[in-house]
Image (tube, rainbow, N blue to C red; front, side, top):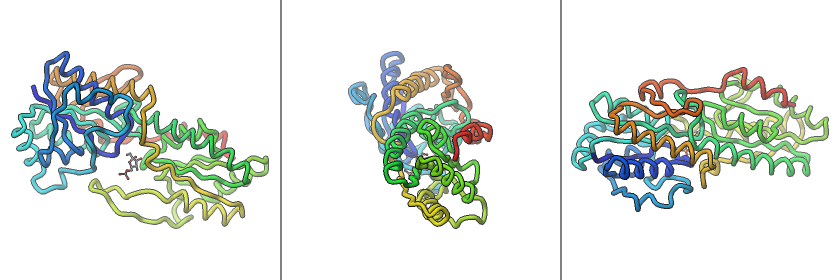
Length: 341
Ligand code: F6P
């Protein structure tokens, strides 16, 4: 069997570990051949592929990013997109696909499966917001990078008696903000799931200054103020209809300065959270996902996605995996509030 592999959506530490595990086990245990499609769904759409053999995946386990490239191309938005993909797969002699992606990339996979194509999914996102799996690889790396940044910012905040705001990724879900904020001892954590009250945020900040400490505010990029309390800026949309985020940290800094009279500065971690080498946990999870994904191919479990449940890797239907986001539950956010202010 000849199998195509693709990585779509935002890059994520651990993608290369999945590719390596899929290819290594696929060749040595199952005798498959592999091609890697370039740049997510753009690869099969344009028939852009490269040979993937054991030599091609040597040394990539600790490497961030993806050797295959990625994109946010949505073939469902391209006229005749699915037909083009099917024709290219046939031309290249590809019998099945392993698609590694988040809600958008894997949202396309069930459509291909419905059309009768053989596809298996591997979940990835630093946001950790896919409901079918307890964890996605990339999340642990992002949390560790953000925590280290918060640790470093504490000393500057205290030396200069400033409010330091750290904007982290998290479009719909505040998992990175919550985990890194708790691990880094933030005084306020703001997440997309719970609209914030700027007056309350300012009160927490003032209370922290009264105890002679300088506050660190961790804000997820998708966090929003309660309606009518602060003006927001709007951004352009990508092919999946998502607005390009970024900027809530700066807005927050202006409002906080106005209300508290304290200097407030923002650090936007941005793509640093997705870059560089994956943590040991992410390499371990990504490798296991890859090993189980190629077993799913060998079992003919088409239309399934591998997922982590506790310490077990299980298979779930791709169609269920992407329909609901895993958001931070209110009780978990309440736990963290003991440390606010
Ligand atoms: O989905 C992962 C993610 O890193 C989100 O946290 C973030 O909103 C988005 O991707 C950013 O995407 P891009 O790098 O394409 O701007």
